Length: 284
Ligand code: L34
Image (tube, rainbow, N blue to C red):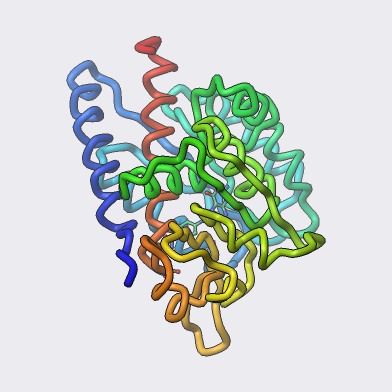
Protein backbone atom coordinates (compact mmCIF):
# COMPACT_ATOMS: atom_id res chain seq x y z
CA UNK A 1 0.00 0.00 0.00
CA UNK A 2 1.43 3.35 -0.97
CA UNK A 3 1.30 6.67 0.76
CA UNK A 4 -0.48 9.51 -0.92
CA UNK A 5 1.58 12.66 -1.48
CA UNK A 6 -0.75 15.60 -0.95
CA UNK A 7 -0.09 18.42 -3.39
CA UNK A 8 -2.69 20.41 -1.48
CA UNK A 9 -0.70 20.21 1.75
CA UNK A 10 2.74 20.77 0.26
CA UNK A 11 1.49 23.67 -1.87
CA UNK A 12 -0.06 25.26 1.19
CA UNK A 13 3.31 25.16 2.95
CA UNK A 14 5.01 26.82 -0.02
CA UNK A 15 2.30 29.48 -0.27
CA UNK A 16 2.45 30.17 3.48
CA UNK A 17 6.19 30.75 3.20
CA UNK A 18 5.64 33.10 0.24
CA UNK A 19 2.91 34.94 2.16
CA UNK A 20 5.22 35.46 5.15
CA UNK A 21 7.97 36.88 2.97
CA UNK A 22 5.49 39.03 1.09
CA UNK A 23 4.27 40.55 4.35
CA UNK A 24 7.87 41.52 5.10
CA UNK A 25 8.32 43.06 1.63
CA UNK A 26 5.14 45.06 2.05
CA UNK A 27 6.61 46.70 5.14
CA UNK A 28 9.22 48.10 2.75
CA UNK A 29 6.53 49.32 0.38
CA UNK A 30 6.98 46.51 -2.14
CA UNK A 31 4.01 44.45 -3.38
CA UNK A 32 4.86 41.73 -5.90
CA UNK A 33 2.69 41.89 -9.04
CA UNK A 34 1.87 39.13 -11.53
CA UNK A 35 0.35 39.76 -14.96
CA UNK A 36 -1.52 36.79 -16.41
CA UNK A 37 -2.50 36.80 -20.08
CA UNK A 38 -5.12 34.40 -21.41
CA UNK A 39 -6.11 34.35 -25.08
CA UNK A 40 -9.33 32.67 -26.22
CA UNK A 41 -11.83 30.48 -24.42
CA UNK A 42 -10.11 27.24 -23.49
CA UNK A 43 -12.09 26.10 -20.43
CA UNK A 44 -9.13 24.32 -18.79
CA UNK A 45 -6.92 27.40 -19.20
CA UNK A 46 -9.69 29.48 -17.64
CA UNK A 47 -9.71 27.21 -14.56
CA UNK A 48 -5.91 27.37 -14.18
CA UNK A 49 -5.77 31.15 -14.63
CA UNK A 50 -8.50 31.63 -12.04
CA UNK A 51 -6.50 29.49 -9.61
CA UNK A 52 -3.42 31.61 -10.26
CA UNK A 53 -5.33 34.82 -9.53
CA UNK A 54 -6.77 33.30 -6.36
CA UNK A 55 -3.30 32.22 -5.20
CA UNK A 56 -2.00 35.78 -5.79
CA UNK A 57 -4.71 37.12 -3.49
CA UNK A 58 -3.91 34.46 -0.88
CA UNK A 59 -0.22 35.32 -0.67
CA UNK A 60 -0.77 39.07 -0.89
CA UNK A 61 0.31 39.84 -4.47
CA UNK A 62 -1.34 42.16 -6.93
CA UNK A 63 -2.56 40.31 -10.01
CA UNK A 64 -3.43 41.82 -13.35
CA UNK A 65 -5.49 39.76 -15.75
CA UNK A 66 -5.55 40.32 -19.50
CA UNK A 67 -8.29 38.17 -21.04
CA UNK A 68 -8.02 38.64 -24.78
CA UNK A 69 -10.36 37.35 -27.49
CA UNK A 70 -9.49 34.32 -29.62
CA UNK A 71 -8.93 36.52 -32.69
CA UNK A 72 -6.19 38.62 -31.05
CA UNK A 73 -3.27 38.92 -33.47
CA UNK A 74 0.31 38.04 -32.66
CA UNK A 75 1.24 41.71 -33.07
CA UNK A 76 -1.39 42.80 -30.56
CA UNK A 77 -0.19 40.22 -28.06
CA UNK A 78 3.43 41.28 -28.56
CA UNK A 79 2.42 44.88 -27.94
CA UNK A 80 0.81 43.92 -24.64
CA UNK A 81 3.91 41.94 -23.60
CA UNK A 82 6.07 44.95 -24.42
CA UNK A 83 3.85 47.19 -22.32
CA UNK A 84 4.08 44.76 -19.37
CA UNK A 85 7.86 44.41 -19.81
CA UNK A 86 8.06 48.15 -19.12
CA UNK A 87 5.51 48.30 -16.30
CA UNK A 88 7.22 48.62 -12.92
CA UNK A 89 4.19 47.29 -11.05
CA UNK A 90 4.55 44.00 -12.89
CA UNK A 91 7.28 41.66 -11.62
CA UNK A 92 6.11 38.53 -13.40
CA UNK A 93 4.46 37.98 -16.80
CA UNK A 94 2.75 34.73 -17.68
CA UNK A 95 1.03 33.99 -20.97
CA UNK A 96 -1.12 30.91 -20.44
CA UNK A 97 -0.48 28.16 -22.98
CA UNK A 98 -1.71 26.83 -25.32
CA UNK A 99 -2.25 29.90 -27.50
CA UNK A 100 -4.56 29.94 -30.54
CA UNK A 101 -2.93 28.32 -33.58
CA UNK A 102 -2.37 31.58 -35.48
CA UNK A 103 -0.02 32.82 -32.76
CA UNK A 104 3.50 31.45 -32.62
CA UNK A 105 4.11 30.49 -29.00
CA UNK A 106 7.87 30.86 -29.19
CA UNK A 107 7.57 34.44 -30.49
CA UNK A 108 5.63 35.36 -27.34
CA UNK A 109 7.87 33.40 -24.96
CA UNK A 110 10.96 35.08 -26.46
CA UNK A 111 9.38 38.52 -26.11
CA UNK A 112 8.82 38.27 -22.35
CA UNK A 113 11.75 39.90 -20.53
CA UNK A 114 13.83 37.08 -19.04
CA UNK A 115 13.78 38.73 -15.60
CA UNK A 116 9.95 38.73 -15.62
CA UNK A 117 9.66 35.24 -17.09
CA UNK A 118 8.22 33.51 -14.01
CA UNK A 119 7.41 30.40 -16.11
CA UNK A 120 11.14 30.03 -16.93
CA UNK A 121 10.24 29.30 -20.57
CA UNK A 122 12.50 31.95 -22.17
CA UNK A 123 15.63 30.48 -23.85
CA UNK A 124 17.84 32.52 -21.51
CA UNK A 125 16.23 30.95 -18.45
CA UNK A 126 16.19 27.50 -20.07
CA UNK A 127 19.95 27.86 -20.62
CA UNK A 128 20.42 28.88 -17.00
CA UNK A 129 18.63 25.72 -15.93
CA UNK A 130 21.00 23.61 -18.05
CA UNK A 131 24.02 24.97 -16.20
CA UNK A 132 22.32 24.79 -12.80
CA UNK A 133 22.47 28.53 -12.17
CA UNK A 134 18.92 29.69 -12.07
CA UNK A 135 16.72 32.38 -10.61
CA UNK A 136 13.48 30.80 -11.78
CA UNK A 137 12.71 27.12 -12.02
CA UNK A 138 9.89 26.03 -14.34
CA UNK A 139 6.84 25.75 -12.10
CA UNK A 140 5.69 22.19 -12.77
CA UNK A 141 9.09 20.45 -12.55
CA UNK A 142 9.99 22.57 -9.51
CA UNK A 143 6.71 21.52 -7.91
CA UNK A 144 7.48 17.86 -8.61
CA UNK A 145 10.85 18.25 -6.85
CA UNK A 146 9.07 19.64 -3.78
CA UNK A 147 6.67 16.69 -3.81
CA UNK A 148 9.53 14.17 -4.03
CA UNK A 149 11.39 15.97 -1.23
CA UNK A 150 8.26 15.90 0.95
CA UNK A 151 8.55 12.09 1.05
CA UNK A 152 12.07 12.19 2.47
CA UNK A 153 13.22 9.80 -0.29
CA UNK A 154 16.78 10.51 -1.38
CA UNK A 155 17.20 11.31 -5.10
CA UNK A 156 20.99 11.04 -5.31
CA UNK A 157 22.11 7.88 -7.10
CA UNK A 158 18.57 6.66 -7.72
CA UNK A 159 17.20 5.57 -11.03
CA UNK A 160 14.84 8.34 -12.17
CA UNK A 161 12.69 7.87 -15.26
CA UNK A 162 10.79 10.74 -16.87
CA UNK A 163 8.17 9.79 -19.46
CA UNK A 164 7.70 12.74 -21.82
CA UNK A 165 10.17 15.13 -23.43
CA UNK A 166 8.29 18.43 -23.68
CA UNK A 167 10.14 21.71 -23.23
CA UNK A 168 7.75 22.64 -20.46
CA UNK A 169 7.88 19.50 -18.33
CA UNK A 170 9.92 16.49 -19.49
CA UNK A 171 13.22 18.15 -20.41
CA UNK A 172 13.54 20.53 -17.46
CA UNK A 173 12.26 17.79 -15.13
CA UNK A 174 15.12 15.52 -16.21
CA UNK A 175 17.60 18.34 -15.67
CA UNK A 176 16.40 19.08 -12.12
CA UNK A 177 16.66 15.39 -11.20
CA UNK A 178 20.14 15.30 -12.73
CA UNK A 179 21.20 18.35 -10.67
CA UNK A 180 20.27 16.32 -7.61
CA UNK A 181 22.45 13.43 -8.82
CA UNK A 182 19.67 11.16 -10.00
CA UNK A 183 20.55 8.70 -12.78
CA UNK A 184 18.06 10.00 -15.30
CA UNK A 185 16.41 8.37 -18.30
CA UNK A 186 13.99 10.26 -20.54
CA UNK A 187 11.42 8.08 -22.34
CA UNK A 188 9.13 9.16 -25.17
CA UNK A 189 6.89 7.82 -27.92
CA UNK A 190 9.80 6.22 -29.82
CA UNK A 191 11.32 4.53 -26.77
CA UNK A 192 11.85 0.80 -27.08
CA UNK A 193 11.42 -1.41 -24.01
CA UNK A 194 9.44 1.30 -22.24
CA UNK A 195 8.01 -1.17 -19.73
CA UNK A 196 11.44 -2.51 -18.83
CA UNK A 197 12.97 0.94 -18.37
CA UNK A 198 10.09 2.17 -16.24
CA UNK A 199 10.14 -0.98 -14.13
CA UNK A 200 13.68 -0.11 -13.15
CA UNK A 201 12.74 3.36 -11.86
CA UNK A 202 12.99 4.22 -8.18
CA UNK A 203 11.38 7.54 -9.06
CA UNK A 204 8.96 7.60 -11.99
CA UNK A 205 7.57 10.88 -13.35
CA UNK A 206 4.78 10.59 -15.93
CA UNK A 207 4.21 13.58 -18.21
CA UNK A 208 2.69 11.95 -21.28
CA UNK A 209 -0.78 13.42 -21.62
CA UNK A 210 -2.57 10.07 -21.98
CA UNK A 211 -5.01 8.75 -19.40
CA UNK A 212 -3.95 5.55 -17.63
CA UNK A 213 -0.76 5.27 -19.71
CA UNK A 214 1.34 4.04 -16.78
CA UNK A 215 0.10 0.64 -15.74
CA UNK A 216 1.03 -1.53 -12.80
CA UNK A 217 3.37 -3.75 -14.88
CA UNK A 218 5.54 -0.67 -15.60
CA UNK A 219 6.16 0.14 -11.95
CA UNK A 220 8.80 -1.23 -9.60
CA UNK A 221 7.73 -2.32 -6.13
CA UNK A 222 8.25 0.59 -3.76
CA UNK A 223 8.77 3.24 -6.46
CA UNK A 224 7.85 6.90 -5.97
CA UNK A 225 5.32 7.71 -8.71
CA UNK A 226 4.59 11.31 -9.69
CA UNK A 227 1.70 11.94 -12.08
CA UNK A 228 1.95 15.19 -14.06
CA UNK A 229 -0.91 14.22 -16.41
CA UNK A 230 -4.05 16.32 -16.57
CA UNK A 231 -6.45 14.51 -18.89
CA UNK A 232 -10.12 15.31 -19.11
CA UNK A 233 -12.22 12.25 -19.87
CA UNK A 234 -15.43 12.38 -21.91
CA UNK A 235 -17.49 12.20 -18.74
CA UNK A 236 -15.75 15.40 -17.59
CA UNK A 237 -13.68 13.55 -14.99
CA UNK A 238 -10.09 14.68 -14.55
CA UNK A 239 -7.52 11.94 -14.62
CA UNK A 240 -3.75 11.63 -14.70
CA UNK A 241 -1.34 9.55 -16.80
CA UNK A 242 -1.15 6.84 -14.16
CA UNK A 243 -3.60 3.98 -13.63
CA UNK A 244 -3.89 5.12 -10.03
CA UNK A 245 -6.03 2.31 -8.65
CA UNK A 246 -3.60 -0.45 -9.62
CA UNK A 247 -0.28 1.42 -9.43
CA UNK A 248 -1.11 2.63 -5.95
CA UNK A 249 -0.77 -0.93 -4.69
CA UNK A 250 2.85 -1.13 -5.81
CA UNK A 251 4.24 2.36 -5.25
CA UNK A 252 5.69 3.52 -1.94
CA UNK A 253 4.45 7.05 -2.62
CA UNK A 254 2.09 8.33 -5.30
CA UNK A 255 0.48 11.66 -6.24
CA UNK A 256 -3.24 11.93 -6.95
CA UNK A 257 -4.89 13.85 -9.81
CA UNK A 258 -6.39 16.26 -8.97
CA UNK A 259 -4.67 17.46 -5.81
CA UNK A 260 -1.12 16.44 -6.73
CA UNK A 261 1.15 18.28 -9.14
CA UNK A 262 -1.46 20.87 -10.28
CA UNK A 263 -1.60 22.89 -7.03
CA UNK A 264 2.22 22.73 -6.86
CA UNK A 265 2.55 24.39 -10.29
CA UNK A 266 0.61 27.32 -8.92
CA UNK A 267 2.51 27.49 -5.62
CA UNK A 268 5.86 27.52 -7.44
CA UNK A 269 4.59 30.33 -9.67
CA UNK A 270 4.00 32.35 -6.51
CA UNK A 271 7.53 31.56 -5.37
CA UNK A 272 8.99 32.69 -8.71
CA UNK A 273 6.99 35.92 -8.67
CA UNK A 274 8.28 36.69 -5.17
CA UNK A 275 11.83 36.03 -6.39
CA UNK A 276 11.25 38.35 -9.37
CA UNK A 277 10.00 41.12 -7.08
CA UNK A 278 13.05 40.74 -4.84
CA UNK A 279 15.38 40.81 -7.87
CA UNK A 280 13.73 43.90 -9.32
CA UNK A 281 14.15 45.68 -6.01
CA UNK A 282 17.78 44.55 -5.77
CA UNK A 283 17.13 42.57 -2.58
CA UNK A 284 18.82 39.48 -4.07
N1 L34 B 1 2.33 29.70 -19.46
N2 L34 B 1 0.97 27.85 -19.48
C1 L34 B 1 1.88 28.60 -18.84
N3 L34 B 1 2.36 28.28 -17.62
C2 L34 B 1 1.92 27.19 -16.97
O1 L34 B 1 2.42 26.86 -15.78
C3 L34 B 1 0.94 26.40 -17.58
N4 L34 B 1 0.37 25.29 -16.97
C4 L34 B 1 0.06 24.12 -17.79
C5 L34 B 1 -0.81 24.62 -18.96
N5 L34 B 1 -0.36 25.89 -19.50
C6 L34 B 1 0.50 26.73 -18.87
C7 L34 B 1 -0.45 25.32 -15.90
O2 L34 B 1 -0.64 26.32 -15.22
C8 L34 B 1 -0.69 23.24 -16.82
N6 L34 B 1 -1.03 24.10 -15.71
C9 L34 B 1 -1.85 23.73 -14.63
C10 L34 B 1 -1.99 24.52 -13.49
C11 L34 B 1 -2.81 24.15 -12.45
C12 L34 B 1 -3.51 22.99 -12.50
C13 L34 B 1 -3.38 22.19 -13.62
C14 L34 B 1 -2.56 22.57 -14.66
C15 L34 B 1 -4.42 22.64 -11.37
O3 L34 B 1 -4.62 23.41 -10.49
N7 L34 B 1 -5.05 21.43 -11.38
C16 L34 B 1 -5.95 21.00 -10.36
C17 L34 B 1 -7.28 20.61 -10.95
C18 L34 B 1 -7.93 21.70 -11.72
C19 L34 B 1 -9.24 21.26 -12.35
O4 L34 B 1 -10.14 20.83 -11.62
O5 L34 B 1 -9.35 21.36 -13.59
C20 L34 B 1 -5.35 19.81 -9.62
O6 L34 B 1 -5.72 19.61 -8.47
O7 L34 B 1 -4.55 19.10 -10.22
